[in-house]
Structure formats: structure tokens, C-alpha cells
Image 1: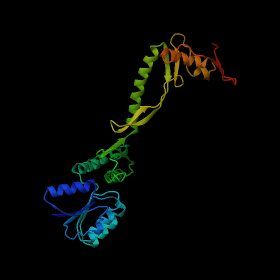
Image 2: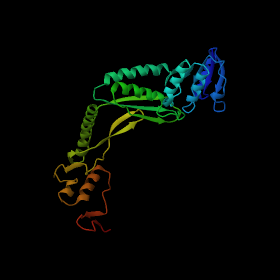
Image 3: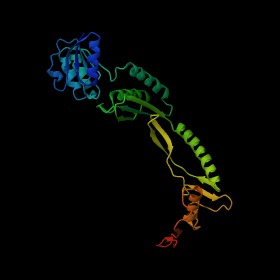
Image 4: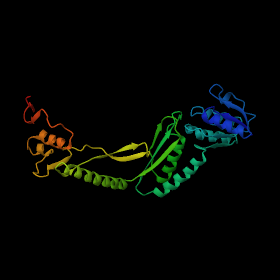
Length: 299
């Protein structure tokens, strides 16, 4: 078969190598110096376009006008797809397009549709994250858009797509379904674990943990490649109610709320028992009712 290669990038070069290894003939290759519309495609049996989002439309148009069937795997130009389809029909030509020709990816497309049908009306929120090498020009990629469109059609909502371009990594597409029910269960388990840890920690230094409040957030985990719930709060006398185990003396912000005095001393006592503050400090008293609020010990 005689093949015209439209695009001389990574994929264009690889297709040219494979085609020749399998006994096909490359009649011409377009590039930035030799645009497709300057090439004579008349001797080609087929044109394969793996170019760029900015040149794909002109490349495909030129091939169809030359009466040459076209296969295109270039993404990022689909706003002109209907015009190409109309041109193909008017020329009685042949045009095949896919955002990804990989066998594995096309199996994934089918799995994606099956999963979306299973998750429909199950109170789950969908999202899609993709990672590609920095030479990938369109963001999000055509593959990500195809996956998103499949999900949108089945789920009847808009799936948000995020994209990263980094290093020389293979294309990665991560589909996530999240439910507040699942997140509440995770938060509940984490809170119980934190409670057990804090109760034991403070009991070991003679302090009773009466109660505490914590806040959670989400952080992207590069190892698992998904958002994970994390503790996003401080653990201190500002967020916990802490009493001395023997005297039940308050060592937390209730000293301020209830005007018990010795606020800093209470906080310092907790810090000293935890071993995170020296035994000696030069702050002796804080009085929030006066302009000069902090007194220092004389050396």
C-alpha cells in the first residue's frame, strides 16, 4: 500500500517506521517545512494524519479534495469536524477519525460506558483526571474528551475534566466516582482513630481529653493518583478541651472564655507535658483588659 503521512511528529515518524517494516511504501511526508497542501498526494492509496490541532483541518481537507481516503488520529481540532464530514460527503470520499486508536484504550472506552451505566442514579459524582507528557499539545486530550462525552451522555450531567502535563510520562486517564456517603464513612473511621490516639497521648501526661473538634480536607495523592481525605486542622488547646486528670484544672481556651486567667500558663503547661516547650519561659502573665497585655519576668 502507498501511504501519505500527514505530520512528522512522534506518531507520524513511528507510523512511517512501522508501515515500511510491514512492506508498505511511504510516498510523502508533510512537515512544517513541507505543508500537506503543497504535496502531490495523487499516488497515495491512503493518507494518515497525525499532525497538530492547528494543521489537521487543512491536511484532511487537502487529502479529501485530492480524492484520497483519510485516517486521522489528531485531536484538538474537532470544532471543524462537521465541515470535514460535509466535505467528505460532497467528494464521495472516505474519512475515519478516532481520538485514540489503541486497542487497550478502545477496550477502556467500552468499560467506561459500562461503568457509567452501572453508576447512573446511584448518587455518585463523576470526575476525570488525565496526565500526559509535556509535548502533548491539546489539554484536555481528545481521549479525555471522548471519555467525558461518553459519561455525560449516559449520566446526563457534565463530568469535570482536569489535566496535567509533566515529564515524559505515558498517557494516563483516571475516572473517579465519589459519594458523600462513602466520604462520611471514611471521616467517621478516621475520627475514631484520632480520638483513640489523642486520648492515649494526653492520658499519658496526666491530662483528660474532654472533647475536640477537627476539620478535614482533600489532597491529591501522587502514589494512588486520587484525591484522599486528610486531617486539615491543628491539635491544640484551641481545638481541644483539656483538663488536668487529678485536679480537673482547665488547660484550654475555656480559661479565656470563662475569664479564669493564666491563659498562657495553661497552654504552656500542656506544651511542657508534651515535651515541646522548655521548662523556663520569660512570659509570666497576659491581661487582655489592658493595653500593655503581656508581662515579662525579670531576669
